[in-house]
Image: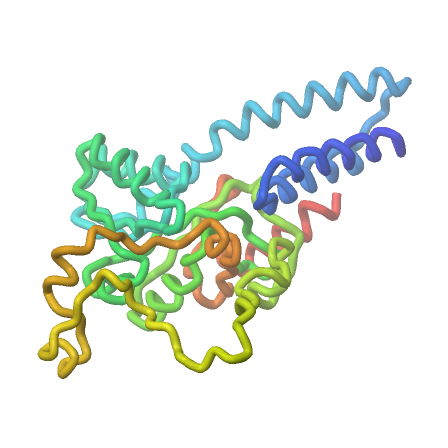
Amino acid sequence: MFELVQALNEGEKALREQFTNSISINAGCELFIAFVTLFPHESASFNDLRIELVQRGREYANEAMSYRGKIAELALGFIKDGSVILTHSHSRVIMEALLLAHKQKRISVYVTEARPRGSGIKTYEALTAAGIPCTVVLDSAVAYVMDKVDLVLVGSEAVVESGGLINAVGSNQMAIIAKAANKPVYAMAESYKFHRLFPLSEYDLPTHTSDILSFPRPPNRPSNSTVARPSVLQSQSISPQSLKRGLPSSSAHTNSTSEYAMTSEQIQLNPEVDYTRPDLISLVFSDVGILTPEGVSQYLVGMFAG
């Protein structure tokens, strides 16, 4: 049994190395390893045990394929006819819930663009193709749109022991704004994403490193350099009238074809996921039922207790 667990741990490590964000991989592997070590058996030999474990593992994998459908069914009763929904980035379980709701009710969806990868555009294209009215919202315009929505739906990379949520970066600020606007935030997560982790903030996440949001080193400057360099493009002309207003002239906008975008180095300094506290989450929809954030903790204790 020891060698089997060791082999499973090595397999988990190999999987983690394939992803920059391995939180959901950790959660799934942790659950499977617990399943193997806590699995009650009366096998006559290790070979019989191995065969039984492989069979049960395949059965679980096949069953897990139905989890998103179960979650979508549970969420259907909380999505009213005519609802305006705000969601973030792209989530397969959220997509399944929205597509199911569209078959029976009239819904409209706002989706954030989810920079820098723009995953929200993928959601927008899929919903639009299905005939669901959808509009892409700037990540910075979440507060602007919040008064227009009835509820917020977010997926998850993992639901942790506190009942908090780890998801694509931007989920936390969305939940904070929704709480201030008194709008419910519903999280959706398959039970294999329940993770025995207890972060208190983003800085406790396993994905956080000292490089994230660090300040780059300033370039070396000549010691005799006393003139500050302008921060605007040299090709942009500034009119006297614009200087009085503190704005570049209109010709600078019309003549310049440059578009500002983050460099790959700047993107790498930013987090991929963030942590949303349990007090910001109204309910968690999972294949094991509709849980409060406190209920997630109780479920995890029971699941890993054997």
